[in-house]
Image 1: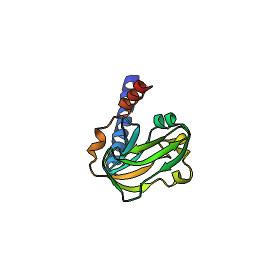
Image 2: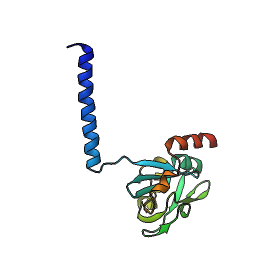
Image 3: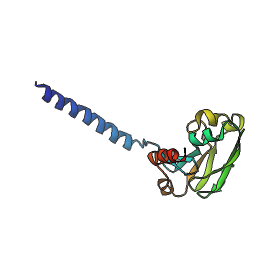
Image 4: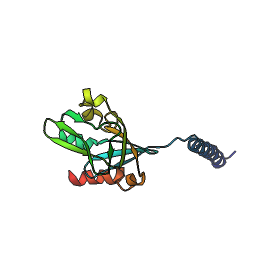
Length: 156
């Protein structure tokens, strides 16, 4: 078999497997999280109707060592742009704003005892709230990762 024919057969097998995996993932409800950002450096990671919200790595770096985080209660409702909590650092205190509208369904209790997690893992372990969004299209009106990176470069 010629090398080009071998490559064609191999690519068909790989492509077929990739397509089958993609279809199976969609069928099983597997989704890739989409992240969106506000100009004030909050993020929301969207998974269905649940948005995981917090402050970005850029924000925590600007604030310095985080010493306290104030979070809302489960069940509290917020409109996009409403203050839902605050962070205090050795440099300053800052309100944190809801990037999307909805009802708080979970708070990150770990931040009560370890607010410094925000400095080490702002966009992973140190999320602030999970919110059941009232309108998932709100998130899509925010900046995507590429636009947010440009926004941060412009601010630096």
